[in-house]
Each structure stands twice: as structure tokens, then as C-alpha cells.
Image (tube, rainbow over all chains, first blue to last red; front, top):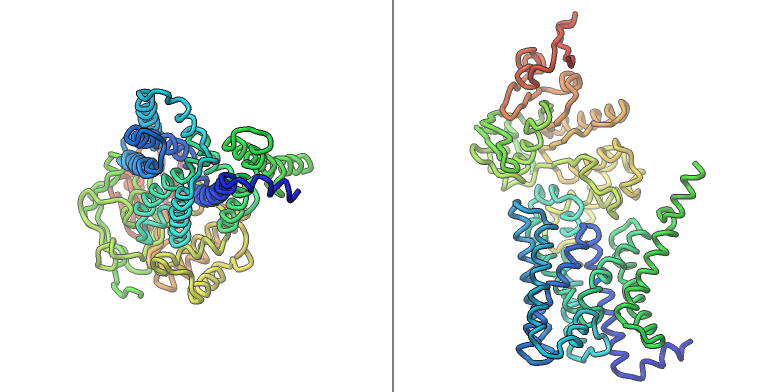
Length: 286
Length: 255
């Protein structure tokens, strides 16, 4: 068993990938807790897609996939996120409509830009589905630095995020500037997405954000525990997904998401007190 | 800090738009510190809009609101108690967490709850009789218990003005009188309480004053002077009939 775990790690690209996957699994799940509680799953999916033109621009300017793509993607993601926030706060259109408009427009722009480059399909695949084994040392540093920044913000503003998520009117009457924290979250989400880009890719990103947190929410009734448990579930499923992809030879991002979804299904049906089977059984015996 | 100003809420010629519709027009009134006022009126009369304007979450189109003689935006002394339907009951917080939220504004940024905050939360829960529920999840509470927790949150917040939007809807009689018992304690502490309600009988019996609202201020004062056939007709329109009972009170009957 130990050998099975250690064997892949003799390749440097495997332990770099594993480290990236675990860090990303933790950060995504913690930020994802607020997304699950605030009903922002669609925003997460959309924002992952809106970074494509940034990625494409970096790709076209540099002529290849390289480290600068991180900054292009980050700038695009933050702009799209704040743009959606601004549009929906004007009160003329609903938030999911604003998300839909920006999401499709940005993704279309990205596809159009990439299609102008020859041999683009392989690279597009990397962006869409991730390339965890291509993680460089510099990528690891960026993931560690920006991931820690996001976790630090979640920790420092824990009580403010809690209040604006649970009772926005209370936040306003307490004068703790709910709009500021809302926009802060709208910056933290694209940061999280961009550091996760290489691990799971654009298309499956929303699963990393939402599924571990949703699984944890079935198992506990306290937010700090939900975040910790979510991080554990996220890290475990990312790591085991990577091992599965090594031994079974399936795409690593997909394997991570499927492991995580399996955990979610187990929790959804079997969670003590709140799982479907539990509820069904209790309903039958009333 | 408690305010000694005798008038807790002073509203002058207030007009407020809500979702592009003028929801309140030219409303003027003063409420004295420590009063318990029922706000009654048909649906869409502007009760919630008035609350949001007092809480400072909606801007006035015209006119002004003063709390204890000062600009409301400089105050965090207002507590707005949500309705059960406005709260996500699956949210992962327990009773203590919810009451502690009342302390967040005063704790300040980058601070964690102190011993004093935790003590205040405990005494707040005690004063509404919810101590034994301190670690329960909010989904395990009845409607009346949830209201008591929100009142405890207002106490922990040291709110001097408490706004309650239909807190008694759907509660049984025992729970309702429990809530009134707690509101009596708030009155002893000179907390001003505004309650939006559809129950005219309780408004007449349990409150110091009633405010009849239908986008404009139709009447404000003692229940006996406000709940007259004429004013009720103005607020609710022609679908109501009014009967003078033997003891001189007015009963309201739907046609």
C-alpha cells in the first residue's frame, strides 16, 4: 500500500502535481463554503469560463503556454467578476442574467482568440481540462502565495463574511459595509479560480469550488467545521484523483472531480440525520 | 452608550422609493424613547419600506430621519429583526453564533469575540429564556424560539430601536404572549420597539400607540383615536365594514 502511494512520487512532476492538487483542494473548498451558502455556484462556473480570453491573450502575446498566463487570467477574472457585481447591483437586471451575459461573451471571445492560432486544440484542452503534471516550481509558489492570501482574508474577515452571508440587513444596520465585503469576495473567487486553473481546468472548476463544501455541509451544522471538513474532503479527493489518474490512466482533473462527487453522493444519501436514506426511513416510521 | 434624547425617531416629510415605486409619501411623525408602536396597514402600505429607511438601508427621496436627534447613518443602534422566511434555516450557525452576530459591529475589524462579548451573549440569551438552547442549530427552533433568539441578538447589539416585521405571524398564542413579555422587559430599558403587524386587535391592546399607514400616514396616536371607522376606511379601502361594539370599540369585518 505504502509502495503504491510512494511509487509515483519518484517523478518530480508527480509530487509537484500532488502538492498543487492538495493546496488547490483546500483553498477551493474554504472559499467554496461561502459560495455554497450564498448560492453562488453559477457565478463560480461562469467566472472560470470568463478567464479564457485572458489565458488566450497571454498565449497569443507569448506565443506559447507560459508563466505570464497567470497574470492575464487573474486580471481578466477579477474584471469579469467586478463587472458582474456592478451590473447586478444597478437593479435593472437580475444577477444570474448578468452572469449569463458576461460568461458567454467572455468565453466566446476566448474561443475566437484561440481559434486564430494554429494547432490550438491541444493547448485549448490544457486550459479547459487542466494539466496538473505540467505544474512548475514557479506555479507552486504562485499557488502557495495567492492561496495563503485568500485563506488569510477568509480568516481575518470571518465574522464579517458570516454576517453578510447570513443576514445582509443586519450587516447594513451594524454599518459593517456589506458591499465592500461582497466585492472582496468577488475578488477572492477569481484568485481561487486562477490558481486552480492548471489543476482542474476551466470546465470542471465549479466542482472543486462547490462539491467538497456541499459534501461538508451535509455532515456538520457549524461553519468553521464545514470549512475544515470541506478542505479535508477537497484535498483528499484531489490527491486520490491524481493517484487514480496515474494508475488507471484517466484525465487527472476528471478523476479528482469524480472522487469528490462520489464522496458527495455518499454524504447526500447516508449523512447521519440529514441524508436522503435517513430522512426516508424516518418518514416511513412516523 | 445610551441616548437620553426624549425622541428616539423623528421623521419629517419622508418620501422613499422602493423598486422604482414611491412606497412612502410625505410621512411625518415623532416617536418618544421607549414607546412600543404598532405599524398597521394593508400589504404594500410601506411598512417594510419605513423600517428599511429607519434602519438606513434605503435612502430617502425627500425629507429626513433623525434618530435621537442625529443622522441615522452615524448610528448602529437600530436592530431590524428578520422574518423567518428571510432566513436560510439550513445555514450552519447555532443560537449562540446568531446572537454573537449582534456584537460584530462593535467588535471592530480584525477583532475576535472577547470575554465581555461572550458574557453579553449569555445574558442576552438568558433574558429571553433561551439559555438551554444556546448550542442548538437554528433549524431545530420553533418560530417563537427563533424570534426570541433574534430579540436576544438585538439585546446583545445594545439596540435602542428595535424594528420587527410581522414577528407574530404564524405563532401560537403562548408564543405570542412570551414575545410580548420580552417586549415588556425591553420597554423597561427604554428601548423603542416598532412592530409591523396585521393583527389590529393586538395592535389596539398591546401597544402604546398605533400608526396607520397606506403609503401616507393615515393616523398615528392612541389606538382609540386612530382605529376609527373613517381612518380605517382610508387605510384599507371600501372592502371593510366597521361595527361599533357595546363597549365602544370598533370591530373590523371583511365584507
